[in-house]
Length: 309
Ligand SMILES: C[S@@+](CC[C@H](N)C(=O)[O-])C[C@H]1O[C@@H](n2cnc3c(N)ncnc32)[C@H](O)[C@@H]1O
Image (cartoon, rainbow, N blue to C red; front, side):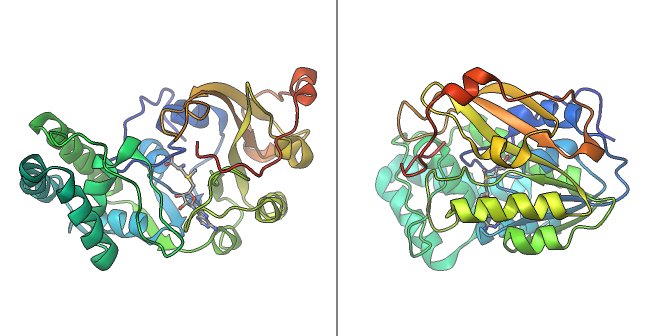
């Protein structure tokens, strides 16, 4: 179903946990005829769906701002041109006024929720992090680069939006704000679910409160679902291992790759991580990879720290 070699492109919105660079591995690991729907309960930045470009898709997230943004791109309300004009004006203002203008846009976004303000914040906040406080207000500080929106960056973002629009064009893609439970429940035989949840026990915020209990319920929902699935999950880094995969998915085909996360609040988080992709038996083209003894010997991750990978 997927092209033999996917040359990954970055989407216009940034989030922590973005899987742009992992899309070739995801495409190469999944066998699917593309007749049903590609279903993502945790769409995030949209990087995976945009790069794999399925014909039919159900793309969901509880973060309404992500969904609004892509609905805007899909309807043509947001285009490369409209984003370019917006970023030229606001970028110029940022250069004149400095960081106060970032905080002005942040306040305006938190009161009105405009998708273009969302785009501005995603591309001008500290390290491309997406974080909301307990009241659902975006609270990431400025990246401290008033010259951020140079012509080259504006053109790059405009091109990313045009690319996203061209990928969706003529395809049956549905974007919805809903929790993963409803999305997985909607899946039917022939569909392919790609799950990329927030990392269990790691950073939590308004849209990312993924608890151990929820993660366990999600594993059960996937295992019992009539559709095939693939699940992305971190496996280990040099500090700790994640025993969730061994608990729920031992015996499942699993691919691993090492990945460097650039988005994170501390040095420990901007670090090399082994990423796993577990694939249901019906959709696997990959060899079964057992969890190695060295992985099991590492101390277990307790899941209490506030981390943000
Ligand atoms: C790791 S990110 C997904 C990253 C995405 N694959 C990408 O490449 O950008 C996890 C996403 O799950 C969403 N999320 C958190 N809790 C959720 C829930 N209960 N139901 C649905 N989505 C949720 C977050 O808003 C976030 O966008």
